[in-house]
Image (cartoon, rainbow, N blue to C red; front, top):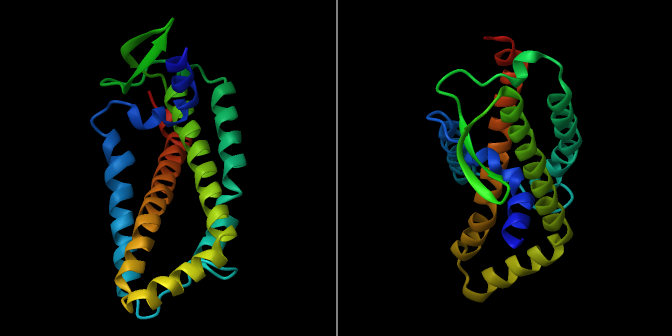
Length: 199
């Protein structure tokens, strides 16, 4: 029962568990490269942009990200109801595969149709965009406390590296999540505009 519940509630992340030789490029390596590039740019900037507050980067990103869950839900609904017959044929070999829980048992390496693949992709984007919204709302709500903590850390030992470490612990995972969302969105756009119309 508990395992079934965990399986169902965590299924939005199943996209990351799809097995195919090219999947890690989209789920790991490209987002990681974008994250490292963003961190490098931030480090070398002579004047660092504000990260929290009404004019901070978190607030600006929230304005953008908060519009995306509805868009991704619409994409998921469109994929689920799209009438093209090719959507329900198995993807070209070697087809991506995924493990499924059927009647309480794990069935391994099920080949995906285009419809299933895109359903997993848009489900992942829905969950990811909701998570980013929640994280950014929390950061904005705690902006006053974050500023006070920043002042206390710097005042406590006079060094700036502890606060940079705190920012890295929060900022790098959020940047990776945002980069993953961007890459997965572009991948989904490619599938919807071109790939589903090919044999």
